[in-house]
Image (cartoon, rainbow, N blue to C red; front, top):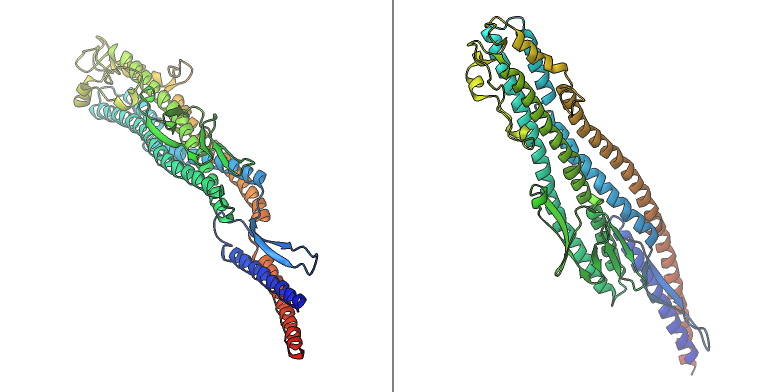
Length: 454
């Protein structure tokens, strides 16, 4: 009888084990579309067969994972985050620089100057020159504002991303703490998902050490997560960079500036756009505005208006190169009276066109970019540089996205849920449970028959 009771125990454990398998399989199926979920496997262990019957028991569940593949996927997320954020920021800036275009405004002004040379005393043509010059200044003002806005918008996104990154770091640290006393695969899934999203924001690298704890390190070596301890990522104005935000990792009293070394993730992309392309474009635009206004003023002062007076500015004289584009304006007196337009050489009378010819001749002279380009060509080069960088970032984003998708597919093949495979496992557990139930029923009948015979 004791042997039959042992068999009942064996059969009961078998039913429990197969039912646990059904439960794990059902959990997999229900989470087939859950972000970051890794397929779980029931751990079935055979009991020792000696001295009697052995059997099986369910010893919890484990998650299907590949730490090396997960690390590569996190790295890809950082690359995608950087290129996509950089492409978006530069694409917007490129569009804004064309509304209105400095290039077309300069071209229109020089075309009008050329027309005026044939009739220097025509009041309508003179007024159109002043209007076109005003359009040039507005185009420079607009472009300068667009660059300033682009850099400020990057600051705002950096601040938002820093807050999100801090929350993700805290989630990783909390998961580390929980996993120190629990092997719940769901907690590990949440930790991996948080690390993946943190990589998308700041790049860097995460690893799981032999103690099961995840460490996350930003580019340049700043530790963001170490076990159950998480640093915060903060942004603060930097007086050495026109007040734009610098990025810091703050861990208690330890503050580390990572602005220069943060070259991955969305935050790295924003910094590359803000302090790379946009800053360079702003510097080039200011230099172009300064050179153009200075050269136009020099020629204009050397010639005379309808009233024979010379030594008057065409544009308000720029105080410095920095900020020249945003501050550029037509001379207030010229804007009010087009007769001040210096179309004639000094003493030649209002019918002379020497002054306007000299102004028009500036179109083809290499007076911009250190004497290597014309004003229009320098405008094309400056705006084109933004477009070129935007194109490179867009192409890089497409490439990195494809790479990330390949890695995601590889990860799914290891730890993703296939409903077809799960249904096959479910059927196998069901049949095993039915067989175990039949086994228990048979043993129970044998035990009942034995009791009746005694």
